[in-house]
Image (cartoon, rainbow, N blue to C red):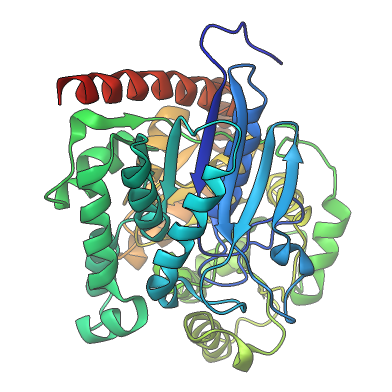
Length: 459
């Protein structure tokens, strides 16, 4: 699909530093740095590049040359299709690093990015940083080149810190694990410098950003992400593989399926979901539970945060004697994800997102696009999705009784289940396509450029 060209074709630079970014077989859920943001930036680059008013999109990330990982991450340039590519630049040691260890190396990445842009045939129209670390890189480069700066936080440090405290984590441990003071300082700096901030929901704009001194709601655009409707759709495709993935864990695999799919991260609150299920005889009687939380071989060799989550899940499984009722697959492929949603829908089940806070909740849209109703945390953007789509219910992620009651009610009322499924299918197609997202994004770029030129002329 193309658009009538009404503005000059622009060169757009996206920056997303941490995790593992490549154009095929994205490794999602491997650790806390390989979540929905990884997929978001790749799909955003492709969606923008499909437009006639975009000359090129470069998605800039960190080059990783690590014998434990695929060679893809060491390629300097990887095409994503016509007019879009991934550009990988050096920052620090060659091996893979968690995002908390990247802060000292961001100035190096900024220097390499500035040199890269100086060699390109077009100047960038905007530089868009994703998350605090890339926001810091983008802020420095945009300032040096006098280019408009866009920022998307994806998740915010102050909000994450509050949620972790509410869950009982001590401040010293938060600082040790997450370098939170460094992150929050970077967020304040990029918010002060950004021409515009792109958020996924009004709740994110009005709630989470309100904790920042430099947030300017009048310069925040709400543009919900899209999803790939060719990949996430109803039907039976891949269901046999999904059944085979879960069947070894389940004594009664034909029962309705409560499905959770998230990174093994404490904020995702997966242990609370397991406990709510395991301590409810009524839920155990009517449904199985599947928690698909990234990839693991030896739990002892996982990064610290993921290891803690998996150890807690496995110990709780044993303590509550949930063997035969709960599936905890060790591995899954990207193509298994839509198939798992379809399998849960075919079983009359529910997708559940129990996160302490979910800035957006892309998995809720993926489930809806496959005809699967959702039970979602009321904290964050998930509430906005469920209100718009009418495809499920919300619960308090800190109240196990509320989570249990929500799941029981959704599984018990079949007529309501069918309404939720139908509502989700309609709403996702209406509100959450990538082409619609790219159109709104591209219009914002022209607004940003006009504003920037006006301020420059007035200076």
